[in-house]
Image (cartoon, rainbow over all chains, first blue to last red; front, side):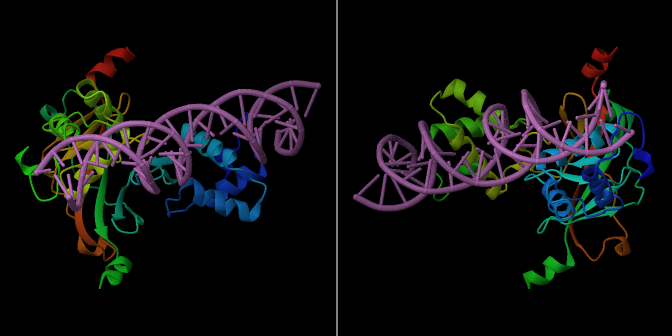
Amino acid sequence: MEKYKDKGLKLTPQRLAIFEFLDGNSGHPSAEDIYREIQRKYPMTSFATVYKTLEMLKKRGDLLELTIDPARRRYDPETKHHHHLICVDCKKIIDIYTDFQIDMEEDRMDSFEMVGNHIEFYGICPECKKKEE
Amino acid sequence: MEKYKDKGLKLTPQRLAIFEFLDGNSGHPSAEDIYREIQRKYPMTSFATVYKTLEMLKKRGDLLELTIDPARRRYDPETKHHHHLICVDCKKIIDIYTDFQIDMEEDRMDSFEMVGNHIEFYGICPECKKKEE
DNA sequence: GTTACTGCAAAGCTTTTGCATCCCT
DNA sequence: AGGGATGCAAAAGCTTTGCAGTAAC
């Protein structure tokens, strides 16, 4: 939480609630997930504030936007390099911290300047597998 | 093109134009890209038809939906397993056919039944790098 | 007192849907 | 002729934005 105390950044109750909800949250919530949770504490909080705060956190580099779910954006407060294991059925997302060696050969990179990578593992989670039976 | 001739599938001019545009297209077009191109040949084609046709192709397994771009869905007619190299600036997407060995250890899979994976490589393309200078 | 933030409502985009008409087979 | 496909327009989601009022500093 300390990391948010800097110049020109006002710590409003709404923001503190959002920071607190995101801190250590590995559930990869959508904007609506965040909105619903924040509303329980601050019923007056608006969707606009949630989106504006998420945008601010993204710009600061304290929040990643996941493009895994075509229906809605999901957010990840864990900014250290990691990958994701996704249930193709319920869309649950699990963090994977294994360091895979997947460096590309120079001649395959089409002269791109590489800045990173991200692996999506697809699978069926135990809960959904059970439902299938 | 032959692969579309089967039971209960009508080959309308609109669909043929879409199939032709997608066939071998490695530009990962959005629905609007497809709509604009098809309109040049069949100005009467509607957006609804484009979306309905893409949905049909997805269900048949002849088209992949990419979730790489948070602003809009993009489509990939290449259904063989491959990865993507993405320009973080202009969002250009390049296909990568290298077969990386990234199998996870059993005990890291959280009991998921694995069905596949997809690597996104992020970089800055030569064109965008030039613009930066 | 300043200045940034909030909330509301409207607007912006992308994608989906219902239904009457059309046309491929 | 029959049934799937088309096109229109409306609707549905998710996300963004403008602005006046509010509150953090």
